[in-house]
Length: 338
Image 1 (cartoon, rainbow, N blue to C red):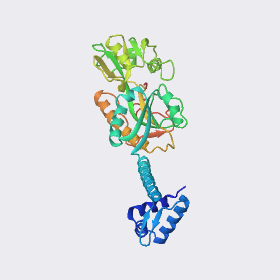
Image 2 (cartoon, helix red, strand yellow; image 1 turned 90 degrees about the vertical axis):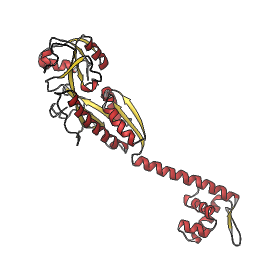
Image 3 (cartoon, rainbow, N blue to C red; image 1 turned 45 degrees about the vertical axis):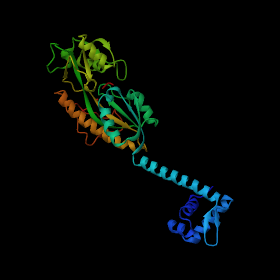
Image 4 (spheres, rainbow, N blue to C red; image 1 turned 60 degrees about the vertical axis):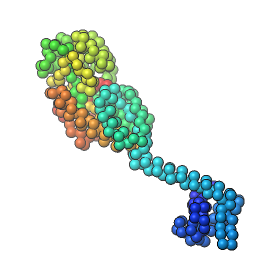
């Protein structure tokens, strides 16, 4: 196999025409260049230069080798540039898992900023429930997962993931427009006699609404279950019932009344789960964008829905080993469904 340093010798001879000029370019002595050339001819098994009394020129074989040497140097330069771009996070592949309502505002905001500054980074976006995506994160199939956790239905322990909690997504009560209770500061018990549209359970058959209602001493009357918030809102608009919907699920709150509930545990905490030791240099840059997007969105939620608790500062994300470690109360803040 040819040595790249010796290929560089024949390439410089082709460029400059003499051993002396090639030696100057390579910062070697002429005798060292002559030795390298002789070794290369021995390896090739063919004369590479035609030595005259006062001149030197490449043979046909020498010129062909110089052509190949140029291609090899170009490829090596391209490889160095590309690997440098990967190492600096300017190129690469970022694989993101996320749940549905994170894909309505939070993730698009982060991606918009990220892709503007990292146009050569390829993205693979995988939609699913955190419980399905986290094993793929642990197995190295994903680089990060946007997750949620709810104090009434905690996520099972995740042994290897590190979660940075970013924002609080309050659950809001949604009533048909003109409902007698619209516009009031409500407690969950004020709605005990109402028919409900609720979600499926986060970890099982029982929804967060039912868990909260049981703690308040009543069993809600469920008319429909759906994890599609467009369906939930449509049924509320039709007067079929009332619902609890996370603020990120309220993309179109027209023709309904939306207001916060006075309840300590009806909110979900949204964060990003990372795999310790992941060598992908792009991850850190995206997490910074996601953190900024969460901070901006948190402030907008307070303005959009007056009365919801303000999220904790996201300047320094709180890290813990799993979503089941100590949670904060709504004023200090925490997370619920997809």
